[in-house]
Image (cartoon, rainbow, N blue to C red; front, side, top):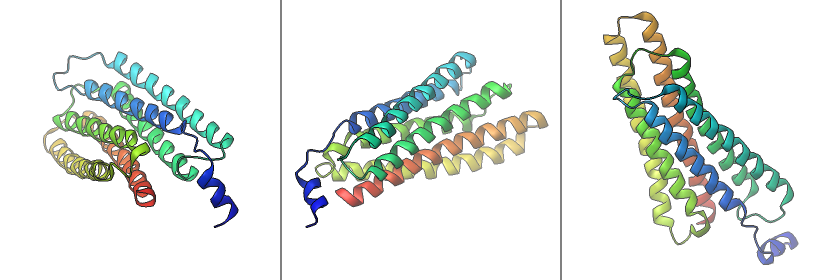
Length: 216
């Protein structure tokens, strides 16, 4: 066994990354819950306030990401490969950014109405975010929760596939029924941003699955 391998085996692993990753996943979930409210089919929402709150979560997520990256530069022993910690943190941050972009499009375009597909996509993003949160919470005990962890990864993928179907159906319905060209353009971009948010969260699932393959 190489010297550095022996050192890694006997040295206590720094566990501060797990609470920070959990904090990042909490921000993701809170952002997605606000997004769901923004696309409430009842339409009785304060768009400006909800977008402000989502932006605040995005800023909070950036700060958590910064703390993780700083800790990676200062820590010798990590709970799992620093590249995996970096990639997982980066993908969570990207997903929060995607949610913020989807919300900002609503604020920017101020559409007259939001089609049913947007509410469905927002709910998919919320559900996928909760799956990420659950998987991240099990990182410290992954070998014992192997089956649950795998199920979270599968569910994230299933939700992303569902989002693809809702996206396609939403675009088809939009072009079939929306007669106002300006509104059509606005809504098409909003639907696309929501689908991108689901795709970004699926990228988190891919990183989690790769970590599982390495360590479980």
